[in-house]
Image 1 (cartoon, rainbow, N blue to C red):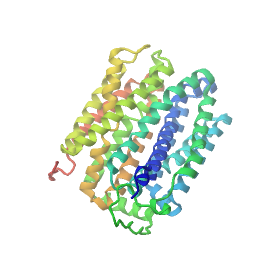
Image 2 (cartoon, helix red, strand yellow; image 1 turned 45 degrees about the vertical axis):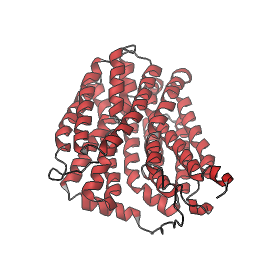
Image 3 (cartoon, rainbow, N blue to C red; image 1 turned 45 degrees about the horizontal axis):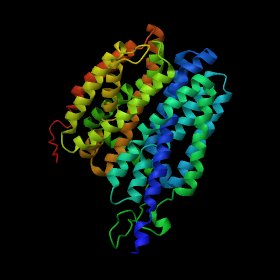
Image 4 (cartoon, rainbow, N blue to C red; image 1 turned 90 degrees about the vertical axis):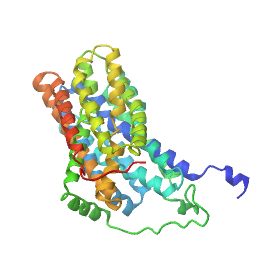
Length: 421
């Protein structure tokens, strides 16, 4: 190999970079509804329940599409699915500037944008890492997982500022433009596989032969895996715990934190910045959790994560003020570290209990349960706020469910010993 060839950037890193920015943008699209909650209420006089219904539908559709994203990508290729998904997201977001009724928001942001973002969920990052990398695969997967937090960090403060100073339509237009900008980048820079360029994956040894792609009916496989897993008690423990995980994170705090802080007199820009700050600690917490999952029984980790999250949510109503207090920052730090820390041990448990062949597919359904919980909280918290005048009851219920979940995660494969190293 020539020195020039050795120094040339491997296209795998270009594929990873494009994927990272696409996933970061997708996270920004999904964060936008929390920014729009108050502006839409002020602009149209709609109830918070009506607006939250659209957010709830968006989260639910996103989750239900996720297990079948692999089937779409297998049938139509990764590039085509992502290109169409980004176009759909952009079109759905831009069309919201013409709405004048809550049902239109539900149709566009709930179903259209939810389906578009769901089509890029879960398997996109894994597919790129598996196809393009032999070495550094874990590092790449970690970075792509962190893309969601990065998107939240980038988009939330800016979208909050736009909504405050230029109206809610500016948020929809910005999201649409961001989605459409990614379309040509995907079309130009993202190749389907190294073989398409006559290359081998990054870090492939001499004589590497690409595995033969076996054509499967991924949709049928996903449904079959769900049918088999539904007969196993541990699957329901995993799905139930992740239901509470979604309910207590992006469904409740991710959707309603800005509105709850606004109820206490805090500006939307400040609240959005705090929620973005959660994303910074989310990255650190997720990376640390991945490291700890290799060392400690994942059930014990989940016990601690849900315990600390529950305690944080119990304290949240008491630490929201008109301005940022030290106690508010303490919540942001500890809650942020815990936000997605549940993912690595949950994936490990799925693979260990249900087998490595179907573990990833089953995680897709466990993740769908996560989104069902998030969807429930997105609407349920709004209903409780309407009835009681604040979000305190919603935070307390979520905290209590986290504490109860501590018991059930310890029951997962209770007779099985997990070997850590």
